[in-house]
Length: 397
Ligand code: T4K
Image (tube, rainbow, N blue to C red; front, top):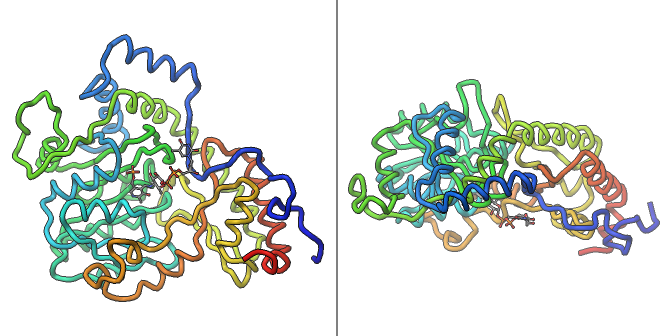
């Protein structure tokens, strides 16, 4: 095609009137929201193990089928608390292809992350990568269950046992996911979930820690104290105010009630994307890896610059002009981020798969605010862009 394509980047009106972000961004109806908050006002109780907090912990214990659930104010603090409560030393082995919070939680606990590569196809850390990067200072492995898929926690459990190290999971992306052996939430010493507004279980900000270990749960409760108790339940090195408020718990309870519907909506949208993206050269939809049930929280694809005709970053510009705010999670790999970059303490060899993916991975909108029509429109833009890729490439950087 030699004519100017009808795209906003070349002056056409944008496909969407308002920016369309990538997160789940669930909002309950105003009436339900008002009812829940009226209760908080009537009880005059905002925080510190209130009734909604208790109710949410109880519901989540049932949901996950675990002995202990501790609500926290976000997953980053939750991960930090687990590193403290496990009394780790030295290094924590983890993938470099994850959100910066995974590594920062380790650094804040006074430990060093040791980064390893991932499986190129699934994007998940796997046994080969762990064994390859293991060293004697490593006291724990942090598995990261990415993109509504998993890093095969049941296999990592066996490996951690053999290596004699602890194992915990950053499961920020995995709420409601399951493998044959059970629901994500009950593997390793502990698992940490994020309830940020962009996640499928939304407390606006928040998260939880799941564990079946009574002693660990006690240490975690002492780290996240209820200041009603004048002394911690057991002695701990440091405490963190990581409590979740009644307002956050109220939103999370509504989100939990609507989880089946929101998950099903995600799955329908995923299938529609799958059907439409199949025919576009140079786009590979990444399937949630190694799960029986996925939450389809993220819609992830890889852009092959040669076959698509534009780089991932050029495509991002085209989409942005249309008000589709796609993201390049994760960029750059953590081994290139401050304070870890160019330091062999954190990374001992090139991480080829991570580096490749950081330049080709693209996240598209999915979630409660996205409808089938929206997906069709986004895919129409992608088809038009690919068909005109040569022409576009000559005109944008
Ligand atoms: N481990 C992993 C693997 C993670 O991915 C994360 C967090 C964590 C651990 C730590 O969990 P938390 O400590 O956050 O509980 C976001 C989220 O803040 C973060 O939770 C998430 N992962 C990460 C992947 O993405 P940003 O800075 O990219 O999000 P933000 O605020 O820019 O929102 C994304 C888009 O949504 C923007 O276009 C704005 C829009 N938006 C956002 C909010 C909150 C709205 O339109 N309305 C809203 O209310 O980090």
